[in-house]
Picture 1 (spheres, rainbow, N blue to C red):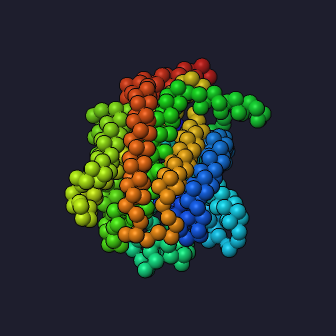
Picture 2 (cartoon, rainbow, N blue to C red; picture 1 turned 90 degrees about the vertical axis):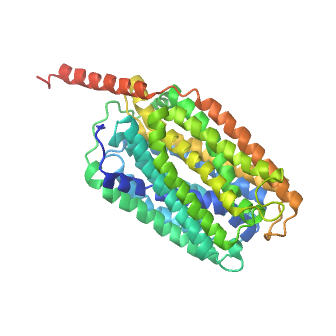
Picture 3 (cartoon, one colour; picture 1 turned 30 degrees about the vertical axis):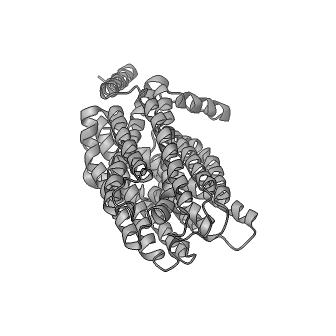
Length: 479
């Protein structure tokens, strides 16, 4: 049963810790995987982009199944904990395998990439879907859910950025930089330990609060066809469909941006090792800023309008960076572009992009009660699994688009900073700018259709509470 009471801060911290695994995985897939298999293993960027997209889309179909199974899990510890204790160790092993392929033919290496990418992301889903499904179970309060979600983003981004900082400062600090094969062993081992440790610590920290015998299910469908129809009915909720349609475009943009980050920073902006570490610090500072800004923005504008406002600001500032560069008016040109101005622009753009993502996730928690009033069942796991299904599809599409942008720009393999032709870099920047702007505008227009406001949510909670009281009265259990 959910509660509207304020949650203790230690519980929020332990809950947020679980998202470190997602952050480490996301950092690896979005920032390094394309570069690793392209520049280190030596496979064409277009082929790698297609392979990663295929893996992500194939894996995404497992998410609704994981969500439904999580909702249906019955144990003395409840629905979520068995997943959170069982998945982390296999995840760590699969993560190591992904980054350490044996020497073999190119087709076999591509098969290895696709296979272990699917395994890793499926195991991450077995950790992340049950974990994030706890948000609407832990609290029913409209704003408290946003606060709880922001802790997830804080630790998720923190884990990913810690790996990024270690990559730039430690694992790839030698003369070969990001193309040093030896660095990926330390990178993958550290990531494996972080992911497994964070999920298990998060589960242990929440154990006393959530370890309760699973309640009996009101409707149990043993027939697979009946279960599938139940899932389709649940995921046909109008608010859910509008939200996932909007965030589809947001995550495509995120996939494009993350996949091109090292190309843009290393080859386009030509940041030094010290500046790359500073870039990571700046990104984490933008996460802290988003953590502080999101609650008052949501309280003032509501989740939907707050998310749209944040998205507009992020999109305009990010576009301004590359418009200024292409127009030769970016500070520092015609020499080296000003790193300070770059960091300032990216800080603002990234802060509001994170605010958009936090509010979107919090809106997903509110869809649970909207569906419950229609179907009579709570399906936290299924909804968040559907959300992750969309996210994986979108990220795969984003990485695919990034690979095609690199191929169309004729970006060379084994490239070195300062030695890539200006025409190639200009083509890369222009293609990136157009893709991100158009995709972002479409997503924000769709988000306008999301129908749940604060007052709508509170009305549904009251309706559900009144319904529960009537059920108790009808059973004769209430005097």
